[in-house]
Length: 134
Image (tube, rainbow, N blue to C red; front, top):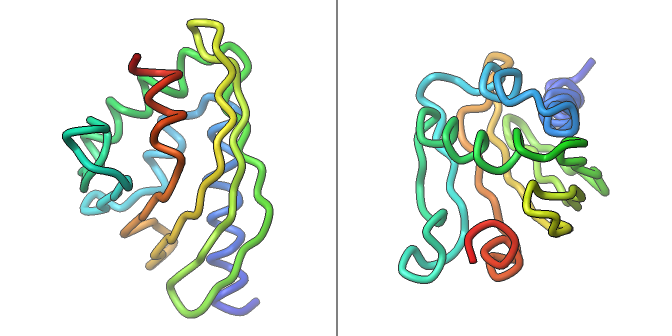
């Protein structure tokens, strides 16, 4: 199996863990030094910016764990080159407040030695804020 296919498989598993409410499993796939960048302006969207693995533990716990049926992450397409995997993804879940969360993303993952070392997440920040923050 090529490095690219192996990394695509890791990204697929990473996203599947969201649907199982498996935040510890998601975090386990992240290197201790992994950074996760979330798009947006911090003054408009408080989740935006570069986050550490520990900061993501809190964010993921607040967003994924309260969803009664998990947060399904539908993988539409992936492209891989070396340690980088680009993924087009659609999420779907019912939040604890009863609102439907259905977002579109572009992720850029960097994978090394079987762990995520960097994640960049581009998403509809207005939709996320409306469901989880407002």
